[in-house]
Length: 458
Ligand code: PLP
Image (cartoon, rainbow, N blue to C red; front, side, top):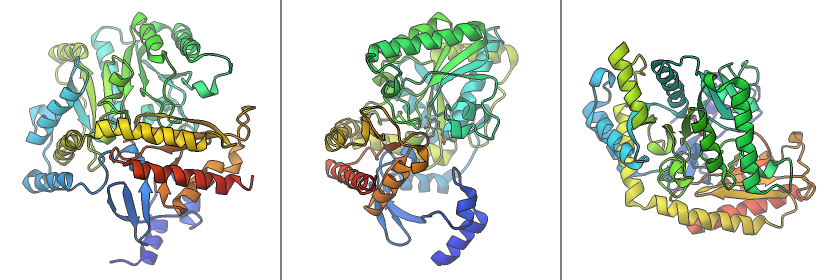
């Protein structure tokens, strides 16, 4: 085995890490961790440090680490057939079975799945589906995509543009002109503190309609949104939000894509987040929880109505000119089949609902009186704690103080991984769906201790 020194050297010399400060990493100024193994909710590194991963990797290891059922399914698939493509009607038992299993779990009006590799490429596919469909329907100018500030939809060109977080645009010349952003349904940050949730939802719908009218409904192809804002701050929609938004879209004939890369397959305590919030989408993006990240796989689930347009399009114009070499990769598909079976067998949707509620209530109870906690929120097995300098006066910490980064650093010292969310002073939690109440207690206790350790000096 290579020594840690050797690996550290190569890591600094040769590895360009995603979402990383290259300079600090290269010069050895920022911490690194070489992860070697994991089981349940815990990961372990080469120094023998064990950490409770309360973010499930990047909210993706939904069934927990070290599941032999999935490892064996992957191994069996790799031995029998590691790869064959899925172009022009080719498939494998795993990819066909998975397509059927996904359709069974999707809303009843959605029965067709196009597979990709990750969330970003699935959303890239979705934009092309929208453009193709609008063209087939004879309205090629209906091309723009509306997304929300603070939405996250990936890191590609159009997907990074749809992402409504400034760090993902800076210095890339994004967003592209086809993407326009509307207000985030971020009730905690409403301008008028006296506004009710319902009134704020109506305000967001009015803002959306204003934008549509300003741009021209005949130029807008689709609206994309996560059922619950994820990377933008783990912000559940305010009461009445989706009931207010959907009629606006229908009125202006704008397709609805729900990006369920985080919320799909149990995280909300329901199989799909769209169902959880009463949303009727035209397209759903899936990734992460589809395989619990045991192998890369994503998908776009398409409604029956849109499928008819796609069918009509290929009848008129020939085969659909869009495909990835690794679409429906057999190893990803085998992981997906084993993963979805496990979610059912272990009752993880129910555990996400029950232990998720226990966890969020315990977190809120432990932190509600803390002088720097502005908000403790979440839904299902997702939670966030937002820090402020003076919550009563709605005064934020200065970003340069890096308070959340420090808290998360203190948490790691105490054995728990949480995520400093990329924009704002927000500690994010997205544990594996198999987390137990005892593990939830530990996460809460460590969060409180770490917060006290950092803020004790402020
Ligand atoms: N959509 C959502 C809602 C996500 O949270 C993510 C990733 O976190 C993506 C899309 C992009 O997925 P990927 O990183 O697999 O490209």
